[in-house]
Structures are given as structure tokens and as C-alpha cells.
Amino acid sequence: MTVGPVSQPPALRALTLEEKDKKYLWHPFTQMKDWEADDILVIESGEGCYLKDTHGRRYLDGVSSLWCNVHGHRVAELDQAVRSQLDKIAHTTFLGLSSVPAVELAEKLIALSPPGLARVFYSDSGSEAVEIALKIAFQYWSHSGRPEKKEFVRLTHAYHGDTLGAVSVGGIDLFHQIFGPLLFKTHAAPAPYVYRWPRGGSREAVRDAALAALEAVFKEHQSRIAAFVMEPLMQGAAGMIDQPAGYIRRVRELTRQYGILLIFDEVATGFGRTGRMFACEHENVAPDILTAAKGLTGGYLPLAATLVTEEIYRAFLGSTAELKTFFHGHTYTANPLACSAALANLDFFQSRGVLEALVPKMALLEKRLESFHALRHAGDIRRVGFMTGIELVRDKQTRQEYTPEEKIGIRVIRRAREKGAVLRPLGSVIVLMPPLGISATELETLLDITYTSIQEVTEAP
Ligand SMILES: *Cc1c(COP(=O)(O)O)cnc(C)c1O
Image 1 (cartoon, protein in one colour):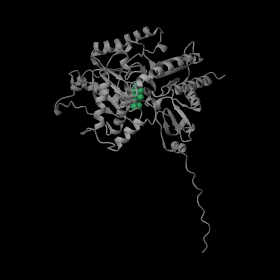
Image 2 (cartoon, helix red, strand yellow):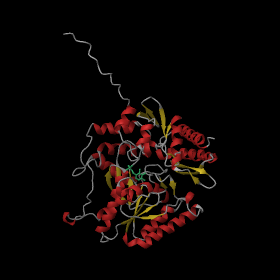
Image 3 (cartoon, helix red, strand yellow):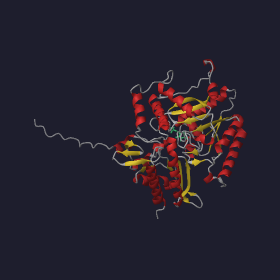
């Protein structure tokens, strides 16, 4: 019997990583139809403020890997801290046990957080930190003999995360349209958005009008309001909407006056982003509850914290039968690797004088941003510390917005990518949020790329 050549099936060409991504994955906040049609970057490594893709191309990390990276990538001290912890143990539960780095981190966090905050409740993401803040506020009033105080006040445009409680206190219309039936009702107060305040006016006039509207909500519903939740100084995901000076100080006075807990969501603004460790320090005010996440581990690992006052904490103490326990927690709560990264991050702030080193870089940013006013479609340029938003408009005179179909933000960041910087827009707002550790030269490069990308895309004939 003769055996002929066995015909082999044509060798299957190995799929590239890009192809496998598009075959197997579903990305967050992404229209996957567009994703599948686009060229995508697959990041393989990073060094300092640069990301490197699988083709060996380098990009400046212009938004700190979505606002969380602090000192750059592959920082020796942080790498070493995680490695050392790995040599001890990667994870143990925080339900019924404690761990060394979790305790040490809590002590450090309380030491550097605004006065009055005395207890740390860990979780894994900013959204969860906010969920926890809401549940604590709600339960606090229940234990304090005021169970009718169970409603929340929020600002328009607010973003506090994407889980259902966090979306309920958020003000992003897109989410409310689709998930509306699943959300609890909240009271909205207008954000002091100076550039788009309906009747216009100075920063002070807008601040005072926004505060008056907030006070009206407090006055009408105070007996039923548990807490007011807001991002101090800068509403990030809203499109980098900064608040006029004096706004949060007055918010603190009003919440006290009306017996309402104040929750500052510092998930984006915390850990040096605004030039101080926490944004609320700029106006010397402290909330009753503070949420932190993004920069907590220097952008290394998922970890979040909800900080509360001793008074709030004490309201949860009682016998088991009293059911005052805070029934909340996750499998990976207080993961030791993440806590050790966070500890090294906070040490780095001190040992390297990170906030001091930021001062000249913020001045450089401010100076260079002035030149952006020459761009024909840069309507408003907003900056707090190292958080910047450039709102692009179709018409500067009338402040007419671009339509979503024009995808102006996406087009600008695509151009920036060709020029070697990774950015991510918020609608038609171009966000600049580099790691605090960026060098002056790199910052100049990032600004050059951003400027020419905006100019080429918006001023093309
Ligand atoms: C990013 C963000 C959140 C949500 O944090 P995740 O870690 O993405 O869940 C909450 N609040 C603010 C202010 C944020 O910027």
C-alpha cells in the first residue's frame, strides 16, 4: 500500500495580539464596533513617563494611565516594595485577619489626611470607595436616631464611578438615560461651571449663585438629606470643571449649618494632583468622609480607601445584636501587595519632595497654557495644579459646542498619538494630566504635541 503525501491543513497563521484583542476582549467605556475598526495600541512596557507598545514605539503617558500614575512607570522604590511584599505573601483576607502593610498604610494615611479623619476603610476602586461612603453616611444617620435622613445631594455633571450607587450620585446624562430605572433618586445642585453658567457672570458671581442654589436644596430637604457628595476644586470626568475660590469653604459651612454630612470624593484630586496632598487643603476644609483611589498606589495596583471621622466610626459600635456592624467588604479588600505599593508611594512623596518639585512644573504648565489661547478653537482652558482641561468649541465667540458626531476630541488625540503622546479626551475637552514625576523637558514636549495636534485638527481648512 502506497502512502501518498498527507496534505496538511494550511498552517494557521498565528493571530497578532491586536487581532486576539479584537477577537476575545471587551473594553471599558468603549464602542467595540469602532474599536474593531481602529488601529489599537498594545502596551508592552513602560519607563518613566513613557509607554512602549509591541512595535517598540514610545509614547508620552499624557494622562497618567487614566489619572492614576504618579511618579512614572517602573519606579525602583515602588517596584522593590511590591517585590519584597511578594517574598512575604501576596494576599490574605482582611475579613477576620489583619496584615502588616494594611496597618502601616492606614497609620500613614490618617497622618497626612485632612484633620478629623481618623479611620480607614479599604476597597479596590474609586467606585467602591464612593459606594462605601454612601452606605456609611446612610447607616450613620440610622444609628444616630435619624433614619429619615437617607437622601443624597450631588452636583450636576458629577462623576463618582460607574457602579449603581456611584452612578446615582453622578450627573452624567448618558449613564442616567440607560440605567435610570436602576438608580435611587438624588437632589442635583448646579456645578459652578463658570464658562457655561447660563446667565454668565464673574467667577465670584457664579460661585455665589451656585451656592445659593445649593443652599436652597439643603433648606428644602435638610431633614431628609444624609450627605452632599462632591469632588473638591475640580470635577474631573465632568470635563475638568474647576470651582471658583471659596466655593468649598462655603460648602463646608453650609453642610454644617444644615446638619448634612460632607463627602469629598478625592479619587481624582488626591495624592498631589492639585499641588497639595488633597485638594481640600487648598481651602483648609476637611470633609466628614473622604474617598481616595487613583493615585493611592502611585498607579501600580488597584486599591481605594474611604476615610471617616471618629464620630462616624463610633456610631457603628454596639453589641452584635444591635446590628450596627457595617456589612460591606470584598474578597481582595486591603490586598497586601497594593498596600505595600501605596506605602512606598507615600514614602516617595516625602523622600523626594514630590510636591515641592511640582511647583516649578505647575508654573511652566501655566505659562505654556497661556499660549493655547491663540488656538482658534480653544474656548476655555482650565487648570488646577496638574489637572488641565482644554475645552474645544466650534465658535469661540458664541461658545458653540462641537457635536458628538464630529468626534473632535478623539480626532485630536489620534493626531497626538501619531506624534508620540497618549491622551484621552472627555468629549470635546482635551485632558492633560501627566504623572507628577514628568520632567520639565517632557512636559514641554507633551504641550508641543498637544498644541500642534489641536491646531492641525481644528484649524484644517
Ligand atoms: C475615577 C473616579 C472614580 C471611580 O474610580 P474607579 O477606580 O474608576 O472606580 C470616582 N470618583 C472620581 C472623582 C473619579 O475620578
